Image 1 (cartoon, helix red, strand yellow):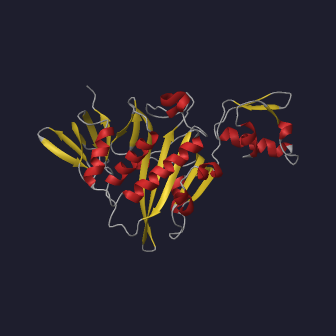
Image 2: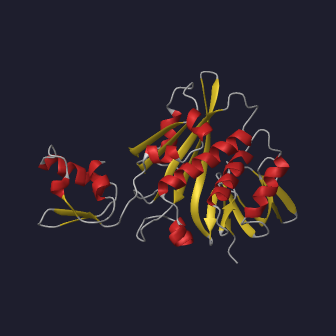
Length: 313
């Protein structure tokens, strides 16, 4: 990370500016690592090095300083240059580890819903997860994912950002981010891990298998720093978990409806088993299930079994 911090501003820097113990083999290894993360490098015969695009590295101290005092006191924050998955890492902590959040610049095995791979270039977004002991909860209904989605949209505070059931943040008909909620039970305790992937500022050649958009394209010069954004979203997720059990389902559904981009649209729903249903999306019920009306029937669809796409006209 020493080399990354030297080059993060995207300006040319002399390799000689590195500490004196940086011999040629160590420099080569660091350069190879940056390239492996997808960071393009420019070098010349004069020994100058430069990143093709500037990167704001995540910094634990900068994120912590933007959290409210009560959250700083109870939350353990972990920031890594590379992990298999922030959610997997939190899931491996001991059950009595308390409330925690984890961020990684690069994930080698990031996952989306239904086991799909989540790709995000180094420094181009936020890959983060929060962890909470929920052993005292009576259950974790599907609407929890909706509550976290609402919290994120409200924290981002941009009129074009909406929610596509069950767990996508979208804008202008394209994907901005996603949420994956997992419940892990061990040692007679239940731990909730909520993972978030968010596109912040992606390069145009990033390999994503669906139409996407990033915050830079939406916010332009008003885009917050990645560290300030991370702190804002950690706070939003933590507060949503604090309030979830006490919040009436009706209040959550009213908030969700403000951002529901599917309501009233024809949709096609395909289940994991291959069954396909078509109808009109009519919001969600009190448990967070999608209401689909069509062919003289109404279905309530669970988030864990279906994917949703707009039906082709």
